[in-house]
Length: 300
Image (cartoon, one colour):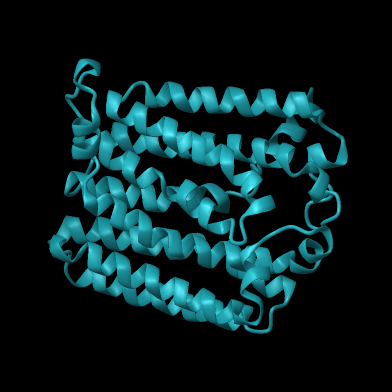
């Protein structure tokens, strides 16, 4: 039983929290923006736990979808499903239970969130297969990893809406243009860090015919990553300009920019270790942006 549990924990990357933190920080930031400050403990707890559960379920789906490719990649060859230590059906059951648990959390919120969560799930399911057909599948991942933003707005601004009131007008009213602007610019951050991630496996991906942004961008990969970082940061600064978050938000943007420049130093030689380190450290950049948003609302 203990050995089986260890396989499940390995399947969901339990000892690698960077993945769910990359999902969490934009979602929490959006909660604060939507609520114009502190959103309340219940929403914070639901989004933290829901993020962990959905990221874990996503790992199960991804590993099943990519098992034939992963066995040819050094970094992923020993994953439980890829190595055969865990049957495909069992991995899918684990993913289904985790996704169902996340959906049960969503059901405790308003109907607007429930409807938007279904669309988010569809994007999550599409991503593993996008790598076979889309030249930059990281863009699809960017939508999936940013979908907590409109859901956060829906959780706050859809409060009080009943199922009988659900319609296109109520769905769009709860998720204003600002939410989609934040999502659009957050997508560039996902492009930045997941291209760094793809650079780690570029040689293996070229050999097996996998499509990634690192391959598509070629020798412009490092320059493009820096453009992605600065587009993300400038975009969020623009989108939150009307909130008047003050000097702490400005300090957070400066610190996040410094981290992006440090990542350039890590990836400029395109070494596996350097690129993987830059990817793993991105959650600190997201945490910095979130801290700037939260403290900005607290002190304005």
